[in-house]
Length: 227
Image (tube, rainbow, N blue to C red; front, side):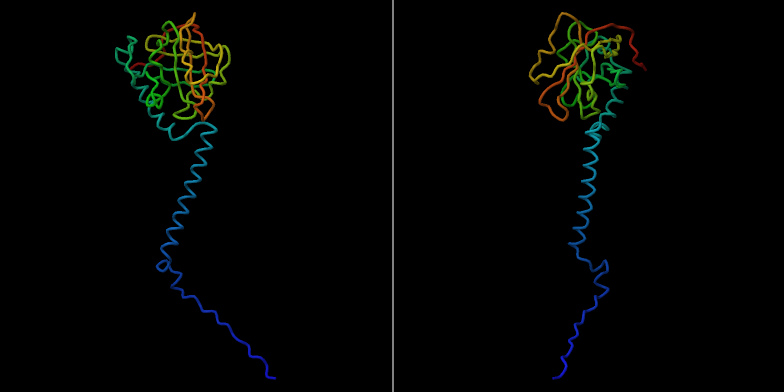
């Protein structure tokens, strides 16, 4: 019997031109570009989420930092109405400090969404700091500099200092409560002068409110800088 014939399988050589950039599939290039964009976007989102959990949301904080600078400049040359304790919504009215947390922020008159994007806001339906009654100030905990992020760590006796154009007022923490958003009675007047700080609770949720109650402890000359 004759020997079987070996069949040769020829593998065609790839034309080098088919691998050149000019001959690549447009669809493949678009897919590769989109994949790169999605990978970078995903990485940035992970970083953003990590920073938000560990500290505060970075993009809104950048915006709020610029707004704080503007409030500081506005307060340094505040109009007469601020000195006369008749501020309008949006006016810079003072500066609040939490010494045990090494934090301080300029305070704006009003607690609307736009107001709180610039810093802690004074409830216009409550007395101004230094006046008789219950003074109330609200602030964010995770966005826009997160000024009240750690108010849950304030302890009894910790000072909260508010500098106004007409004086410096010190309050000392008495207690902290968790309430429902509709429990506005926390702003009611009681038998002594006090300051309440309010913020959303828990972190990353608006389901409840954390309220810090601080009793008036004393006053002194304002330390705000003037132009």
